[in-house]
Amino acid sequence: MLIGYARVSTNDQTHDLQLDALNAAGCGRVFSDTASGAKADRPGLAEALAFAREGDVIVVWKLDRLGRSTRHLIDTLETLRERSIGFRSIKEGFDTTTPMGRLLYTMTAALAEFERDLIRERTMAGLDAARARGRTGGRKHKLTREDVDNASRALRLNLVSPTKLAETLGISTSTLYRYVSPSGEVRQMPR
Image (cartoon, rainbow, N blue to C red; front, side, top):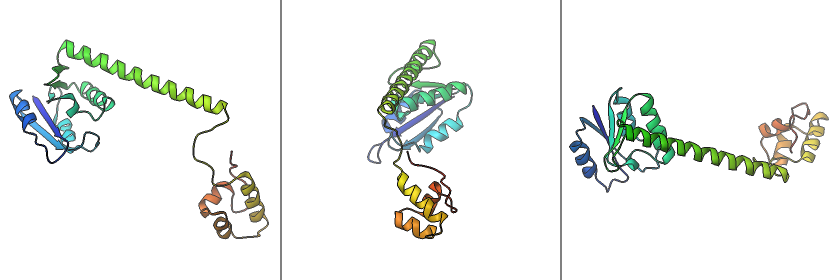
């Protein structure tokens, strides 16, 4: 069965052009959404994917109607492939039910994986370079080493209550306890 999916970005737009093309392509059932391409929540797409069975073909007017991004498009196509559901894009002539369409899909997926690997490699190289210069990522610690030492001493000697100490340091009691136990034992030292 051919299952159509149409999406427009705003309420000012209509599905008419897409619906006409999907009906002309022979879609027995059509699902639609009115949502920005960037939005992950698309109930019509979710319904279409849930409705589709092995051997069915999801049909869209253009590729950009299905995926929010290249990555999302490839993930969706991979999900369809795993479920033995075909995919066809009318405008681009992309059809995973044909040998040429499967070849194009495989090449596109390989390029996307290659791109992900390059991004991961560059990210790791950048982090290594930053570490070599003494920089570490992550959020700055709320307390300094000196603050932790003083808090530990104050709690061990019962000089002040944990609540008052946290207030003085400008942090919550739970943050204080992340660094120092109620008995004054140091749990975590800032870098």
